[in-house]
Structure formats: structure tokens, C-alpha cells
Image 1: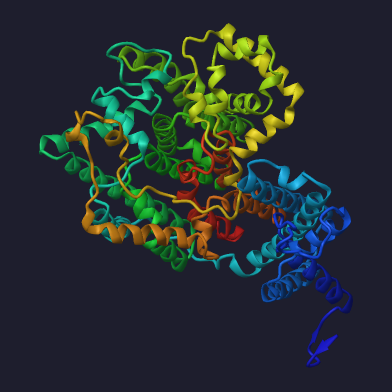
Image 2: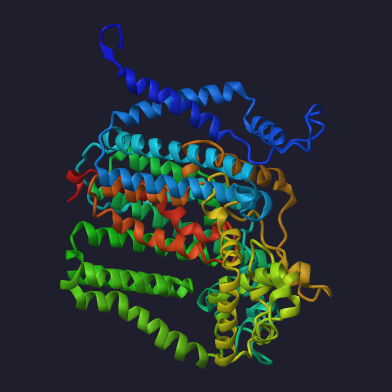
Length: 637
């Protein structure tokens, strides 16, 4: 087929594209929940299964003709474009696997979001048919989109080469100052800053106010308030600003001072990383675009004024990711420089001091590096293994106990099996044997598990872990856990999926940040003993705070912009980067993905479904990941 005698279309591919485009459109818009009733189908025999089946299938197809037509056209174009792109057998398999994961993830998210189980997908023959149609449509959409997107990125988005620029203190401080100035209105509107419940608990620990956190440590007793459940180093750091505010008669003054200093710290970190982008040869225009993003995209100034452990950890995490990239782009040679090794050592140590699970992430990084850069084994042991050893053997095992700081409880690492046990008791409590009940009861309050169970939050269960449980008790518990798994393995799978699906649901909308100082202390101070520690928002700017909150929610619904502000898109973007790197043999770029992917892995066993705080390090790093993934091979130095 020719158009104006210049552009030739392949007739066979056109018909294939038309057919698949219509199928993808109908399937993607198919409802999984519409049912037949006497009200919507008055002339049907409700006892006739065939008639009900056919009518329900009909009603499941979307009646929005404009939407399905436009989507069919768009998908037809994408399918045709994908058919013209050559792929090797390996690339097809990898793309299909990506699409299969995407389709499966979205279908699971739909079902759990609606009814809290996968029964929406597999309950009846009709449900299975609708699942098959919709899931295969999603698979087709993901497959052709990834094929075309890989080609578009390579052809049109890879950066033109620019010569890198040397570090300039004037540019560095100037960019940081502009960023800081753009964030100042947020400090005014949200004065004195924001926090979550963890920060308030840290405040209570410092001022020796009892809270549930003391009960979550194996070391308890009168006068023991400080624990390392939340990094105690940050507890003491925050405390200095609380004390400062109280010294001047208003705790908010100290919190505001912290917000100012934290804004300065974060703007300097982002500015320094942007300077590194220019040194690498990332174009001036793209660096300016990143600067504007950090200045005016609301989540970044909201992070700047937030007193919470994750904002600090995420900054160190970003620096560490770029240090890893520098190691990769120099093929390990950077490890031979003392200054670089000192920076890697210090940043890794600071990560561990500000986030408990960072130790495990860095140990995995160290193992990978021992295989990848074997000739620098000594440097790797010094820069990665040594800080991990010092943190574990000296800081946690010697220093904190000597200072009277109680350790965090083991229940943090056991939230997944505890949650699975609670769901099992809720659904199959009548099948639990006396021996299993006794074993569970030694570590958890068996009789209360069914009521404590929350399908998307394991805190109510894990908080009730009995700290006096012995190793023998835990061994017996896991024996019972395994016995119950053998009887109903699907319960354990459903528990895990129900507690994590929001992390890969592309339609997930989240607050992403905190919009006030948490009121946990105010709610629990029944006798108003601690009014000097109350932090109340300024009612004068309530409308401005509400507007900013709504803008953050709105940005998650706007295509393109939402890649920087959507929890559920994050894993699919990271996996796309991985697929893109494999497709075009960009091996060094995998160094950018290791920590983000490990962070996602932690989310898959996290206690709270869809908590934006857990993916904050990836949100910090995303603009830099995009810039470096699009840096051409010839642009490296």
C-alpha cells in the first residue's frame, strides 16, 4: 500500500496491527467486576448459566466507544511499528518475560485492590475467561510498547555529545542557592517542617516518654527509652534541634532550624550530583531541566523540609549510587584512588548509620564487587566490608550497649512469616492443631491474631511479638509455620501479595510525602503532660498546604511527569532500563540499578504496603538514572 507514492505500508502487517489493536483495546477496557442482575438484565433467566455467562461477558465490554476506538488506533500504530523493528530471539524472550511480569502484576493489583485476594481472577470460569482476555491484552500492550520504546529511546532520546565541564565552586553554590530559594515558600507554608510518626517516637524516646517502641526491643527495663529501632544517631541529631527550640521557648524554632539546614544539605547534594552530570558530558540543557525539576517539582522541596530518617539516608544513597557508577565507568580504576575510597567508605558507613537494612544492601554490593572487580579485592574489603564490620561488630555490638541503647527487635525481619501466620489463623483457624497453636503462642498472641491481622500492614501483628521468646521457641514456631504452609501454601502467597501489590500497581496514587508534623504525641498525651513538645500547623496557610498536596496527587495522573512521582511505575521503569541495557549492551549502566532494585526487593518484604518512604532513595535517584541511561557510549570519559 502506498500513500502519495512515497511511503509504503506492508498490507499484511496493517491487517495484523488492526486486529491486535482492536483486541488490545477491548481487552484493556474489559471489566472484571460487572455482573448480571435483574435490574440491568430484566428479560434474562437468572437460572440459565449459559445466558448469564454470555450476558455478563457482554456487559464486561466497555461501552465507551470513543475511548476504545482511540486506544485501538493507538495500539494499531504501536503494533505496526513493533513489527518493523528487528529483534533477536533472546530479545524477544526477554521482552515477553517483561510483558508477562507487567500483565501479571497489574492483574494481581486489580484483584487485591478490589477484594483483597486473587479470587477476582480465578473464582469462576467466567472470571478466568475475563482474566485471560484482559491479561493477554495487557501483555500485548506491554510487549509492543517496550519494543517501540527501546527503539525510540536509542534513536531520539540518547543525548548528543558535549564535552564535560570541570567542577566549579561558583556553579555548584549558585545552583544550590537557586534550589534553596525555590524551596523557601514550602518552609513558610509548612512551618516549622514536617515529620512522620517515627520522628515523633524518636522525640519521645529522647525525652523519656513511654511508647510502644520500647516493647519492641528484647532489652527492656525501667529507665531504658533509647532503642536503635530507629537509628539512634539520628534520634540524637534530631534531639539537638528539639533542645534548641525549647531553649528559645518554642520547640518549633529548633525544628525550623533543622528544616533550613536540611534544605541546605539536600540542595548541596543535588547540586553536586548535577555538577557530576556536567563533568560526564550530560548536555547543559538536560542538566538545566533536572535543576528545574528539583526546584519546582513539589516532592523535592517537601523532602527538604521533612525531618525523617529516610530523607537523610536517601541523600547518602544517591551519592553511593553515583560512586558505584563512577567505579563502573572507570572499570574499577576509581577504586585505586585514596580520595575516592575514602568517599566510598564514609558514604557507606553513613548509609548504615541512618538506615538499619542498609547493612544488608551494602553486603550484597560488596559480594557483587568481589566477583566483578577481583583485582581490587583489597580495596573492596576496605571500602565496603570494613565499614560493614565496624558498624556491626563495633557500633551495634559494643558502642550502643555501652551507652545504654537497646537494640531493635528481631520481629522487623520476621514481619512476612508473622503476617502469613495471622492470615492462616484468620482463614483456617479451625485446622490449626494444638501443637501448632502452642508453638505460635510462644512467639505471638495466638487468640488475637485473627483480629490483629491487617492485610496491608503487618505492624499490628509484629508489634505483639513476645520479646522473651527463646531460640527454641522460634524453632518450634517455624516448624509449625512450615507444617501449615504444606497444608495451604496459597494463604502464604496471598498474604505476601496482599501486603505488597501497591509497589507495582501503575494506578497507585500516594501522598508521597508528609504534609504536617505528625500528631502521634498529641493523640496519646491524654493528661497533656507534654504540651511543650506539641507542634501544631499554622492555620494561616491551610489552603496553600492543601493545594500543594493536591498538586502532588495530580502529578501522579499526568503522563510523562508521573514517572518521577509514581510508586507503581518505579519497578517497571527500572526493569525497562535493565531490558534496554541488555538490548543495547550497556553493561556499565547496570551499576545504576543495583541499589534501586535491592531497595525494591526490600519493599517486597516490607511491613507496609505502598509506603512511599521506602522508595524515597529511588525517587531521589530517578532524574540521574534517566540522564545516565541516555548518555551515549562515546560520551563517557
